[in-house]
Image (cartoon, rainbow, N blue to C red; front, side, top):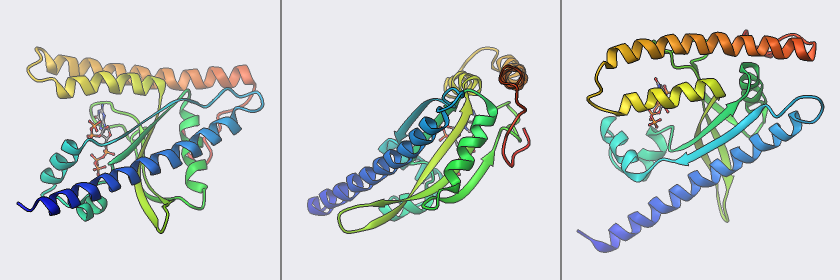
Length: 216
Ligand code: 0O2
């Protein structure tokens, strides 16, 4: 009921969202530099495209309520991992691991958590490599460690996830159980095709699969 407090809170929230946007910019620059470097030589760009977003205020509030956390700046920073989200879409599976390894090796990046849904797909067939990182962002009089969620996947996995996402959010679809089964079959076909495409590329380039420390 105190307008001054309300506007002060608004201003802190906007400042926080600006920080998340800045962190996205920092990480996107790092990814673009890696992509540019890797594309020198005979390799094509490993990254097809990068998408990013700062979570909408209403989604932030809904998620905090779901987690039964209070709605405050501290709570957003401490409880939410995905306010800043970046999706990196690569051509081949080994590019996914290459990009994630190269990014996490950088000494200003703190790796908080990895969920490898490529090695361990979700029961519905979802595949993607998820990382939560923290990156320092320098402002006029402070340095803030900001958390960013990075999802790295192939074009085919991204195509699948977009359609499956629609199913998840649309209510009252007829035959949704049958659609789920079809999507699961599609996910398996896509995984096989992703591996085949990588092996064809290796034959064309005359080298063997290099996934770094990862078994692909
Ligand atoms: P939206 O609408 O895409 O933003 P946490 O990071 O701990 O808060 P969680 O669930 O442990 O939450 O994270 P996880 O498993 O890493 O997945 C988070 C995001 O991955 C989701 O965000 C989706 O974007 C994507 N994702 C995970 N599972 C699936 C899936 O089965 N299908 C699709 N299409 N996407 C998936 P949100 O906020 O749930 O959704």
